[in-house]
Image (cartoon, rainbow, N blue to C red; front, side, top):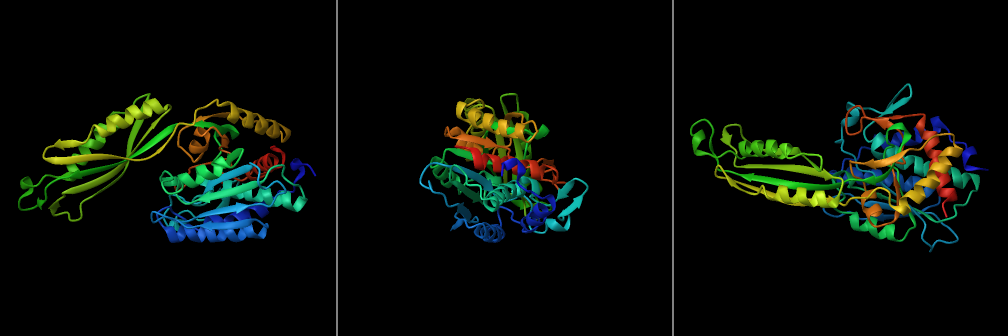
Amino acid sequence: MDFTELPFDTHTMLQGLKPWVECESPTYDADAVNRMMDLAAHDFATLGATVERIPGRMGLGGSLRARFGHPRANMPGILVSGHFDTVHPVGTLGALPFRIEGNRAYGPGILDMKSGNFIAFEAMRQLIRAGIETKLPVTFLLTPDEEIGTPSTRELIEMEAARNRYVLVPEPARENNGVVTGRYAIARYNLVARGKPSHAGVSPKAGRSAIREMARKVLEIDAMSGEDCTFSVGVIQGGQWVNCVSSLCTAQALSMAKTDEDLEAGIARMLALSGVENEVEFTVSRGVTRPVWKPGRPETMALYDKAATLAGRLGVALPHGSSGGGSDGNFTGAMGIATLCGLGVRGAGYHTLEEHIEIDSLIDRGRLMAGLFALLD
């Protein structure tokens, strides 16, 4: 049987995907992420995979590695690199339940990226049931912290990728059914403002508000954005009592650039903001960084060409391009390993309460993944 004839079934895939979506797994809730890993571990075990649970660190959840038996198990093969953490807190199902409306299926994390992981799982299931042996060994590595920059598992991903010839990342598809062949560099920052407390009702002028100073810095940081590097502040926490002038305010910021050189220049600009103004100490420290995955790398384009040929056999176009919004493909692509990202399903609204997938993309993306598993050599 050819991979184009595998009996993928939309209803069956939605029924299999539903428990994954309904197992909420926000990054900062290690127990919730581990419940998701348990669920997936059982499913992979039903396919006969050798399943390994890797304990988490830094207070985050653990990872899951599933290897499929192969007569050439010791040779470099195919790595599916995915994450099971989402940005949606536990309880989001109340506002964003798993539901089907026309060609859309909704749910927290359904697009980013539980459906992508699931179609890769389903592709292996279809191949195994059809008795089609992959030319190379296939390994899945599913991690708990991509949404916060992969601070605890980058080394694990890179070590696993180094053992393989190809890396497939089933993050959401680009517009027009596209895939990703490069990604921008991203840096994160921790911001701290330390002021002087006072009673906000009795002696407000005696204090030095950390919140006020942070607000000034947020506007300054946003104004730094340009064509070479963008900056944004996405998290702010400050104050505990409304009748107190706050002495502490913290925030998290992010910058993105198309080249490592522009990113490093942006990092220098951010770090230069540290100092004392208005008797408030402001400190910027560098957080996790994703390197540029340069577009047009020959090993990636050779992999893309194979994927585009397979897509052609399915009767669909497969455009490609570089993209912002980093993924763990940044790491493997920057290592010089043939990497293809954006292999997940089509959809929109990820990271929002409108997150959904296009149901009709489950089958064609599942078949494409099956083709890659079966024919890459």
